[in-house]
Length: 209
Image (cartoon, rainbow, N blue to C red; front, top):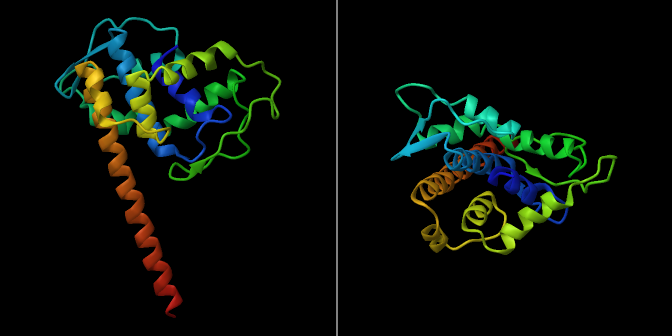
């Protein structure tokens, strides 16, 4: 199991926090994938630059393997911030689909827009697949043990709260990525607010006619 998989489980399994923004979760998942790639030896970080290793180690996880295959192979190397926005595009939906295929959650009746809130559907509602309880238990155990990496990324996505001091328990590369995830999510929240204000202003103009 990878940190990205564990994070997706915390986000989508029944009884998890349901007031999540898909965009925030997508950015957090992209950060988790990058840390997984660092831990797998597929990349190193040079300050905020991602440096792929050649040849990259193979991974049995399909989504992580896909992530590794999209890494820029030559200079200029990609920044962590650029990776988050590029790889994070609609990534939450893809992890949701993977959980559906594994029978951990039921298929969604409709796919919400990136900026809308999502609500998980309990596993077993419309699916005959058998959930792997050990997979869920592992993610829950990491959260209950206050694993600094998983809880920091979960908090960034809106799942629970973690004090900033938690970053001191992370390796330098992981702390760099987690910090970038928080910054990107802050930028996304500002963009949502801007769109909301513009939408309200537009509505007010039409009401004046």
